[in-house]
Image (cartoon, rainbow, N blue to C red; front, top):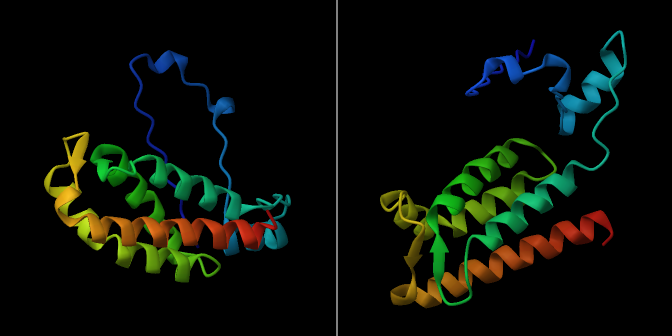
Amino acid sequence: GNQLALWLEHDNPAQIAVESVSVALLGDAAIDAEERTPTPVPAQQQPLQLFLQDLQALRASAQASGEVNCVAFNAQIEVLSLYSQWEATAPLSRNLLESSAILISRCQSASEEESVSFQDIITDFLDWEAILEETIQDVQGMLGE
């Protein structure tokens, strides 16, 4: 079976209330939980909507000028890599991660720098940006937007 661990770090532990924590399952795990648990748990109706929001956050980490906020970019790449494990989003996620390789490499080297220029490889940057935009449009199409 699957296990879930939750670590909450907070300056004032007295402010953390268990009833304020919610957990949502996505994808196949959500469907399994909805069908098999003694107390049915409604599946997230649109996990693709979360994928779209994460793609848009990745887009927001980069400027058309070729500047990338590597702190935000690295965080979003980490989140998006999780989507490569879900059947519905795996092909799109993997393709995007592959096309992001050069940005990932440079941003990991400069992880503490908020703004990193990709002007010296602007063609690669623009190719990545086009693939990201195409991925966003594909997901919007899947959602019927």
